[in-house]
Amino acid sequence: MCQLLGSTVIQPQGGSPVAALCVCDLSPAQCDVNCCCDPDCSSMDFSVFSACSVPVVTGDSQFCSQKAAIYSLNFTANPPQRVFKLVDQINPSIFCIHITNYKPALSFINPEVPDENNFDTLMKTSDGFTLNAESYISFTTKLDIPTAAKYEYGVPLQTSDSFLRFPSSLTSSLCTDNNPAAFLVNQAVKCTRKINLEQCEEIEALSMAFYSSPEILRVPDSRTKVPITVQSIVIQSLNKTLTRREDTNVLQPALVNAGHFSHCMNVVLEVKYSLTYTDAGEVTKADLSFLLGTVSSVVVPLQQKFEIHFLQENTKPVPLSGNPGYVVGLPLAAGFQPHKGGALPCQLVAQKVKSLLWGQGFPDYVAPFGNSQAQDMLDWVPIHFFTQSFNRKDSCQLPGALVIEVKWTKYGSLLNPQAKIVNVTANLISSSFPEANSGNERTILISTTVTFVDVSAPAEAGFRAPPAINARLPFNFFFPFV
Image 1 (cartoon, helix red, strand yellow):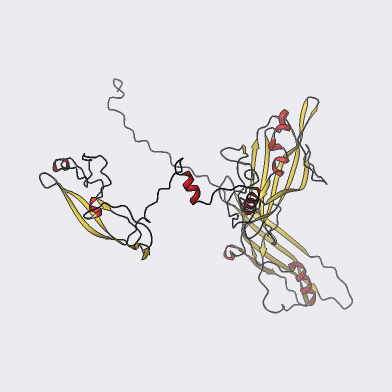
Image 2 (cartoon, rainbow, N blue to C red; image 1 turned 90 degrees about the horizontal axis):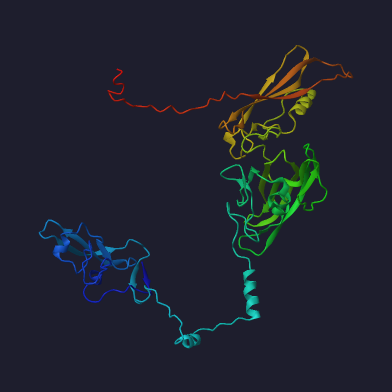
């Protein structure tokens, strides 16, 4: 409990204060319907009441203990009577007010509105109003002081004029330019844009400047701006050949007429943002890469691709092989446990060949998905090791081949299946070679093969059961034929 050197509510004088309170008494000198505390209501009025609209009347709920007036109706009496009880109500909150010695503190003081009569008096009691160049400079300097604001996950990235626009498709496949880029939300989207090829020079979304001109605020509501730096520009021709420009100057779309055909050059096809941030939630660097191309009337409407990635400062990003399914051409994500125990008993040559086949730090596990986390070790797929050898008397067993078989399946929905690794085996095949005499040389062929096997089960589309129609025809429906 606490003692408040504060205020109290305005309560009526005389008798019990709460007994004289009636919040539903709105009509003076008239009985309000279902208002049991209205002193203007008589027994005849109670006979048409259905219930008490305000059954409990209390004072200020901040007090630890206070009086409460409880109202009810006795409909068994003739005429019905009002039942009134005055009880002590206890506030269970530990922050309730036990004693108040300054009653006006529980009510707001109405401010005095300046007018022509009291303006001079209010000016004498206040500090007055001043506005000069020195105070303005002091005010703007305070605004430049960095605050504790920071970007949090999912918060839109602010720019000098609004927010960083990240086009995406919402209700349809068409691009929407008003979608904001969110902090720490990596995205990669494709959307379609309907364009008029004759007006390609006037469409902002086809120009590099639309994506490179904004300046990102270092933190929300800050005056410090982080410019977007163009790191690379790749030009794609009509035959899909790629050429990287040496300079990073901003290019504008240009319409070129070639006989009966029109082409628009330097059109933005792909945009990739790479933002660097600190652990304090500040954006420190913004890089941008473009893929520009030439658009003809054959490829209208135009498909664009947009990506944004966030990298923490002073950290090395871990490359992924998919999100979540594996992407064709990317390496398998793998890890290993430190080798325990001594060297295997084998000849020196066999050890050299085996180390050559296994390589340095051959993994023990393979990630099931391209974005699997290292801490989720129970989800990783263990590699099953096998050794196959052909023993001959008076011969040397030397490893000759390492056969790796990776079994994968299509996981997820039929519309967007993801590649998932389900089993990995590594088979080391050894062969027998006659013991070579001292000074003799022999050439041994060794090989390593990796095979990917699709073990996906045939997809079965599921359909809901057709609704059962329980309809009955009237008995004379076929009258007079039947």
